[in-house]
Image (cartoon, rainbow, N blue to C red; front, side, top):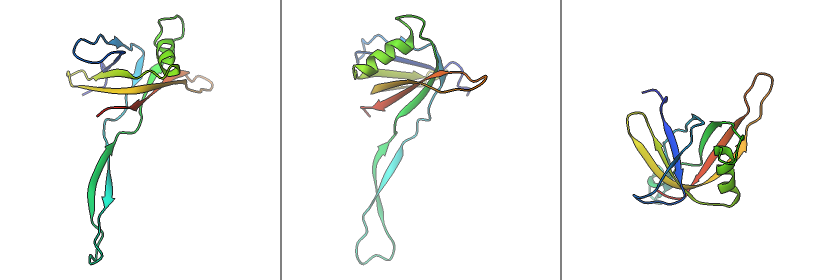
Length: 131
């Protein structure tokens, strides 16, 4: 499946009645795979270490967006405002086949660097605050 057509949207409220705002400038999406921590649980009589599975850690989800700061309703300005006010948002990432992930998290928004013939883009990091 191509990533083309994948959508990312956010809402300030959660639940079934939430209204999501699409982010049309979306260019790249992160991997959705959690690193499961392993917790050592070895007894003194063992000849090898033994482990139990701990909790999962997705880390921060990083997205790249086309930079657009042309108006008050541009995604960059809106998301930057939420980041500055430390607002938890409700997110939904939907793949072209309809598979969707819904999660809560705090946005962090910045601008990427560049050089000759490089694009300056928006980097969106989401710090998860839900399962």
